[in-house]
Image (cartoon, rainbow, N blue to C red; front, top):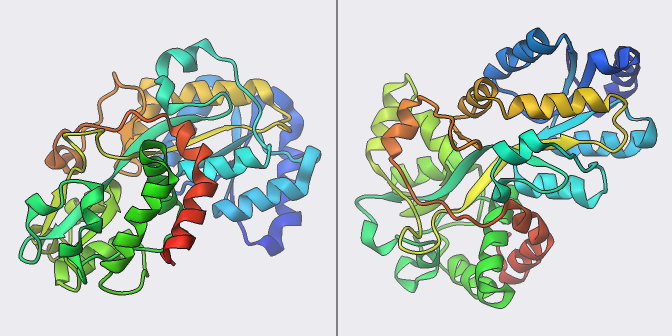
Length: 340
């Protein structure tokens, strides 16, 4: 059962979810910020394998977190899924997750892609995109290069308060400390071609159109355009260079999609089974390919022409838990640097 809602529909949805949860371990109440077509097959396969019915509520992360907080100990939610480490960090900060002990998850999910309270089930990288005619590719090989004065008037970005940029800054703080990370942010702000606006796709389009010379983007936005059936999208991508950052150093910044079991979960056995299922080979393919990402389980391969076209790369092994730990400091750093 899939429910979508606004906050004005919360009471009605709560009644539905609470009724559905009365079956205890034969039901799973899932609060998800994911909304990909392959998720339908992902969930149907879980029910087929286990006999556990999934009651699903989808909304934006902040709406779901607000809902879980308001429901408190009476929340029917068993699992919270979302698409960014900073958002998982927010849920963790609110004390919503319960620790999960599972040898299967510990064996399948690498240590740097999990915390005691939540797990990553797919990964993406945040890469540099450049206009081939405006910027020399050799000048933008590292995130640090974006602060180089030679790029003055050429950098485009989305808001510094967006979770994707928060996670990137959190990784920089972990590597270089807050003071140097702020110096970097100030340098990037000085190079802005315009005030931050739009999403990652907007940055890619601006780079392709020559409105700016360079930007950063999550890889799945690029993969969507590379796989697009629209000729104009494919032509646009021909004008854009995709650069894997910091390949001679720590590697490209990695972010994740993931989730965990909630403290108030009424169906804890079903919740653990679901998390373990998401680490299975079939589920990993569904979960990752639904958003043009890579599986968290290293032995699972996804056949995706766009990801293959972008090539292999060195990933930063920084534990995603460190991103969560530094999320608040990352926002403060952007604010001080004037990265609105």
